[in-house]
Image 1: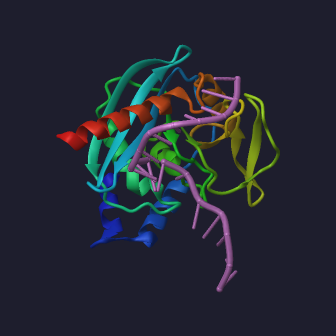
Image 2: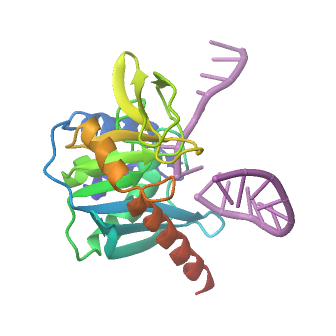
Length: 229
DNA sequence: GCGACAG
DNA sequence: ATCTTGTCGC
């Protein structure tokens, strides 16, 4: 799977055409269906050191309903691709995959920092990961990439559909009052309602769900250590 | 041509 | 994502 990614880098530039081919292949394999009960969630995120061209991918497995940390892992790699909106997965998915491979604990669902199908080609990083690993996945992002919010929300637990070209591609969810909402979308093998439900079950006192928040902290901490050694 | 644009 | 101190608010 990852081996096919090597030819999207031509010399020193990123081949957008091949990247789009890979995305259309992935989009064609997305399954939006009810997923089995979720107990263990793996949150994923990445941190960067642009100067040293290093990206650290981190994953933390959390268990419902108490959100205790069961396991975690990380992987540091060379940054091979620039950041281009719509192609985030090509930049940080490899490091996350390698971190996932170091994990010992099993999990039921992967929660990613970024979008799922709320993407121009219905292929955000959560969808890339969900399809490549053939597991349930959801995307949780801080900012909108595409789509329009169908109504305003303000109270914790409130949600508004996110529509793009007449299609509901995700939901804007209020995880904490007085703070900007997050964008939730299906990655693979789950329904939007379940995705929103799982996100709310994973939120404590912060804006972001605990699995991703912990992965964010781990990635940052490991990046800092990597800088000194 | 003019904005918009995950991390 | 990342560079960054103090500061406003619950």
